[in-house]
Amino acid sequence: MKNRSGGDCRINPNALDLSHARKTTLTTSRLALRGFTPVDAVSLHRILSEPSILQYFSKTDAPDLERVRGLIERQLLQWQEHRLGWWAVTLKSQTGLIGWNGF
Image (cartoon, rainbow, N blue to C red; front, side, top):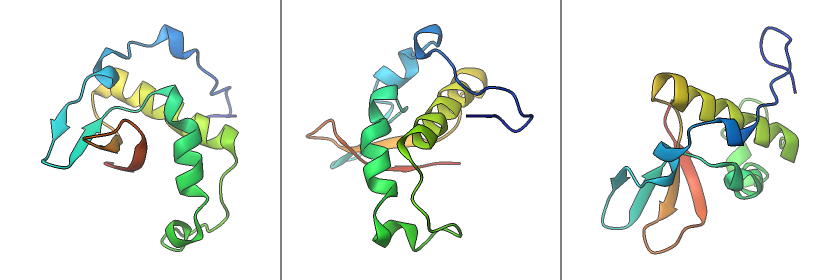
């Protein structure tokens, strides 16, 4: 996958500081918001393949798994460099990804 300037976007998740992503940073009575981890790629891919989700995007073709991995990698870099980005959303009682939010 290429970044915006045409360079290779593949990063080594082991080289990143993921300590912020391993901690729950915000909770409600039902939900937990945390940083993404590379493990979330399959779940996010499943979510982004749902037609009921894609109808709200300007591009309605589901991304392939490699593209989703690239999205998460960019979010990991965003959090590491700027301490902001997408939040992974889980049910507080479970660890599986149910969605995302953020900017």
